[in-house]
Image (cartoon, rainbow, N blue to C red; front, side, top):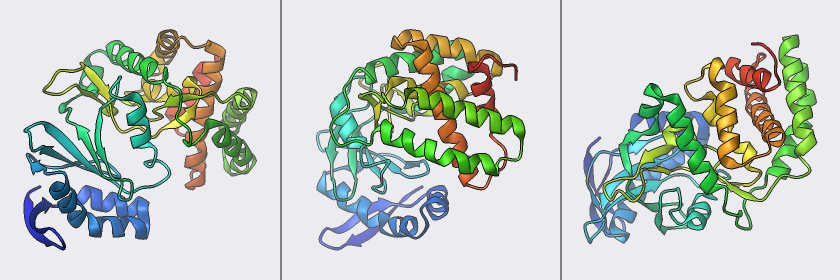
Length: 316
């Protein structure tokens, strides 16, 4: 990806970002008309915040499904990252969470524009994701995630974030319809058992600040300053029980023979009651499976079903 120069109204000529094709496709697929509108305005948005925050581009941009991240340098020479993404129910809480953590286990937030969602973040080392560690030593990778989650969930959730209680209630309401759409009896049993486990704990949803998406790709090396060896990025924050955080580390680089020791390690490091953590993890499996069924699938994803059955003491 290279820069191009555009004449941005109110700013003048600014070198802005070419938009990666992968981000264009993802926004068109998942964002529809709103996603296409976001992409159309993205070059001007990048130019505006490069100018407003006095930033200089220092390398090619990066992207996921929703965000464009530009490596930049501040006027004092400090490396940083400019993150641009649509504001929606998942992303609106990100700056709230990052401010609450204030760098304790997570990337630091330096600037934020509420209207556009633009954020200026501490620059981490995108060349050193935790995925590389996981390929050679799964136990070390799970331990890193567990340590970060223990720190992140020690923070009480700020007021105004989405709550796990309402989310759990909505999931339980969707279960009867999903059961009717599943074609396989074993799948129906797993879904019903996950719902029953969730129902047991849904009345006490918790008040911790949850990351909700701490998979290996959302853990990066601490960057040039070496402030931390590993830090979390890209939260989709919730207020709730820390047991709801464990599933990504159980399905990353999935291996059925590792599910139980991964769960035990996570629960121990986070200091969780194992039965509550199991119930909330089954609730997280339920959430993922409901999404799949709502998208038209008639079978549960293999990895999700396997995690649920293993945590319930069944063979897979």
